[in-house]
Length: 285
Image 1 (cartoon, rainbow, N blue to C red):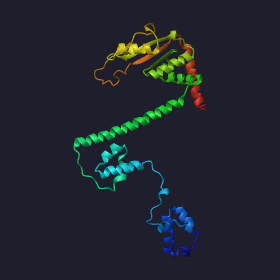
Image 2 (tube, rainbow, N blue to C red; image 1 turned 90 degrees about the horizontal axis):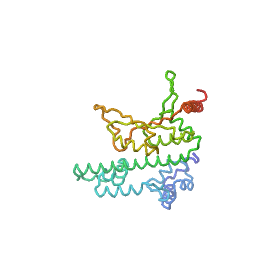
Image 3 (cartoon, one colour; image 1 turned 135 degrees about the vertical axis):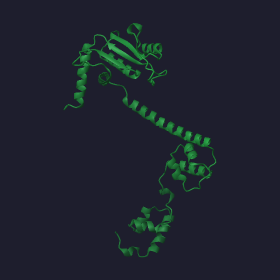
Image 4 (cartoon, one colour; image 1 turned 30 degrees about the vertical axis):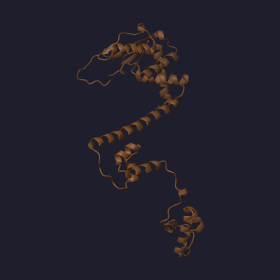
């Protein structure tokens, strides 16, 4: 301790001084420095019962919500209604109003269900806003791709989704399959980057026979900007009556196969580039 016990012998005298300073708007630190009381336990005893001055309170972003929650609780609102109205969590609503009288339950089961549904819908809305905000930030962070970046992305996409040569079956050809229009767009941009003319491309739609086949054929032809002469006959997947399909609706357009004619040399470049990416990621491997 910075001071001997005798320093605090006259506790009541010190308390009177501390209370007076507190009421003048002094903070605990200011009272400590003024009275030279450096023992926190004794300092807290000296000002016990005296509220801190308003200027020492940290601002709280939820103060307005808390005040509104207490107002609604005094009007007889339940936790569910407060939660739905303010868009806050149930734990926060409980913390803010738990010292207030509990209101009488006056709502019907249907009303309770509607309130709960409204609260859940609000939570889903907030989650979706956060999800979309995160995606938008990530999209902006990418910016434009350099030719090298696009080249590496295209090689990686092909190695994930394209056909590959096997030791037991030589097939050094470039065939790429995907259902995502964004992936198709990136791969076509990559083919342009490596100098593959569009005349060397052949396309095939692969789709379930019970889907809108004609609509899918039109969609992919417009998407890649090619006429019917560049498209092979559509490959139809047979329907299994025991299987419940989930890939249905207007957004389902099957997969698009992109084949590069005379693509053996391009395939070798792809495989070699992929090996270079693997080595670049871990030169010791």
